[in-house]
Length: 456
Image 1 (cartoon, one colour):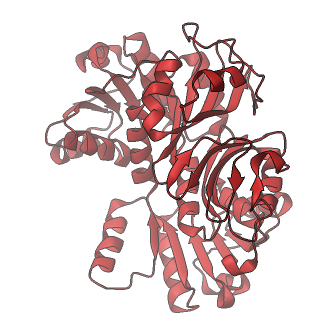
Image 2 (cartoon, rainbow, N blue to C red):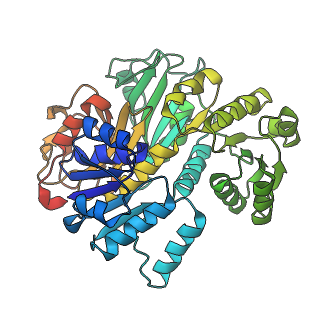
C-alpha cells in the first residue's frame, strides 16, 4: 500500500513508523526540514520538505498512484486543502484528516449527510477522542490507564499495587490457579521505572504499576482481587472549558453526573455557560485553592484537568489532591512527563497524541492489525490483530510459537467469545489476539503476523 502522510510531528511520525514496518511504501511531507530528516534517519520512509497542500509537492511524493493520504499537520486548513487537492487533482481513494475546529468537523459531517463531497473520507477529532478517553478513565477510576479492545469486550487496565493488595508477593502462576475462572492476564509490570513483560514465576510487589488485559465482564472482580474499590463518579470538577472540557461536561449532562467547570478565560467561560445547561461554570484559575474550595473539590469524586497546558494540568491535579479530591486525572501531551505522575500523586493521565494515533490506525488498518495502543513513552504496545491464513502462527498452539521474551498474548477472541490464553490454545484463522509487546520486540511480532499483500 502506498501512503502519503502530511505532517512529521509526533502523530505523523508514529503513524509512519507503524505503517513502514509493515512494508508499506510511506512518504512523509513536512514544512520543517529537521522533522523530515529525523523521520528519514529513523524510519524506512521517504521524506519531502514542503507543504502537503501544494499540488507540486504531492506530485513529488507520488500522489498519482498513492492509495491513501493522511493529513495530520498542526493546521486544520492545511489538512483540509491537502485532502481536497488529493481528491480533485490526484483522485486518491482514501483521505483521512485530523481536524480540531468544531466548525470544520460539523461542516464535513453535514456534507456527508447531504451526499456532498467534502474531499475527506474520515475525520479524526483529537478533542472528541480525548473526551471519550476521559470518560473511559472515569469509568474505572482506580486505574491510571485504560483502553478497550475487541469492540469493547476486553480492556487494558493500568493498576498500581498498594500495600493493602491481597495478592502481593504471590507468583502469577499461583494466581492463575487460585482464580481459574478469571479471564485476566498480567501482561506488563513497571518496577523502579523499568517496564518488562512478566513470566509465570514473577510476583507483584508494592508500588508496581501492572498492566492487565481483562474481559470486560471481569473488571469489577479483578479490581476487588487487587484491593481496589470501584465508586460511581457522581460529582466531577473539570479544569478547562476548551473543546475537550466542553465535550466531557456535555457527556456528563446526559449521564446525570453533577459537573462543575473552572475556566481561566472569561470569554471561554461565558461560551461554556451558554452551551451547558446543568453544569456550573466558574471563571478563574484552576490552581487557586479558594476557587477549588468554591467548586467543592473536597466533596467531588474526581477532578479532570484538561487545559491546553501540561504543567497547568499536573499542578491543578496536585492542588486538587491536596484539597481532598480522591481521584485526579491529568491531560498530558508530553510523554516525558508521564513518569512524574506517580511521584506527584496524580491517579491517571490521558495522552492525546497516543489516542489520536490509535484512532487513525483503527481507520486505516486492513486485514490483520485492528488496533495499536502505545504504553508509556512508546516503551511497549498492545496490538490487536486478526490471524489470517498466511500468518506463520496460524494452526499452531501458543506454547509452540516462538514469541520473543518481551511478548505476551493477553486475550483471544474465538468466534466472538473472549478467553484467557493457555499454552494448549490452538491459534486458528479468524482468531483475534491482543498482544503486549516491548518496543524492541514489535518487529518480530509484525513478522509473526505477516500476511500476503493480497490482504492490504
